[in-house]
Length: 300
Image 1 (cartoon, helix red, strand yellow):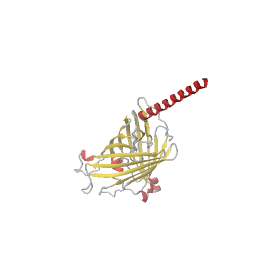
Image 2 (image 1 turned 45 degrees about the horizontal axis):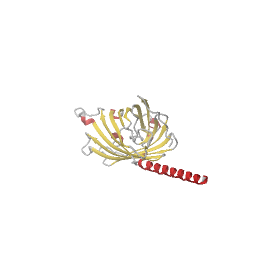
Image 3 (image 1 turned 30 degrees about the vertical axis):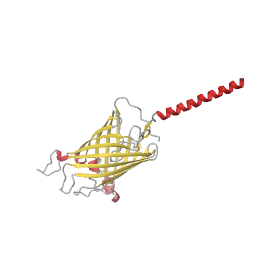
Image 4 (image 1 turned 120 degrees about the horizontal axis):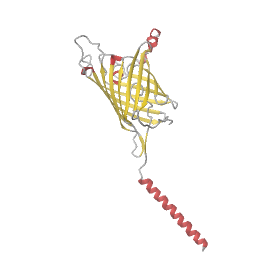
C-alpha cells in the first residue's frame, strides 16, 4: 500500500508538470514577441558629405564644423591645397529622437541653409520586423554672394535651391551598413537655358567597422541630368570615422569642396581619379538639454 501511494503521488506530480508546460506554451504563443530596434547603423549624422540615417537624440544641440581644403594636386606652392579652404558652421538640434533640424552657413558662395530630417521607419527584429530604416530629408539653400553684373541681380526667390531625399539604410551586420539616397534638387534659377531646373540623382554610401571606435566610410552620388553650364562630375568621397566619446570626428578625401546637398551633388567639377582630391574633416560638439540616457559605445 505504501509503494502504491508513492506511485500515485509521482503520477500526480508528473501531470502537474505537464500541465504547467502546456500552459507556458500557450502563453508563449499568445504573448507578442518583443521588437528590437537596430541602432548605430552609422556612427554620426553624416556618412561623409551627405546625411546618414542617424539623428541626434531629443534635446541634443550639436555644433558642427565642416572643412574642405583645396585640391591636393595643387602642389607645394599651395601647401597641397591647405592654403585654400571652404568652411561650414552649423547648429543642429534633436526636436524628438526621430526629428532633427539644423541651420548652417558655408563660405562657398556665402550660402545659408536649413534642413530637417525625419525618421519614418526603423529597422527591427522580432515581431513585425522591418529589414531597413527610412528617413525623409529636406533642405533649402540661399546663395547670398553678390557676383552678378549690375542690373542683373536676381530676386530673393531666384537665389533659392531646394533638396529632397529619401534615405534608405540597412545594417547588414555589426560591421557593415549600406545606405541608398534617391535625390531631387530644384533650382529656382539657372545660368543658361540648357541647365535643368530639376535635377535627379541617386547616392550610395557604406560603412565598414574596423574597431570599436574606427570605421571606414565611402559615398558616391550619380547625377542623372547634370548641369550643362559646368563640367559637372559625380561626387565621390572616402573617409575614416573616429569615435571620441559623444561625437564622431571624420577625416575625408573627396572631389567635392562643398558640403551641402545642392552643391556637392550638382556642382562638383573636380575629377577624383585625376588627383583633384580635397582633404577635409567634420567635427562636432554636442550639448544636452534636459534628462537623457547615457550613450553606450556600440560593441556589436
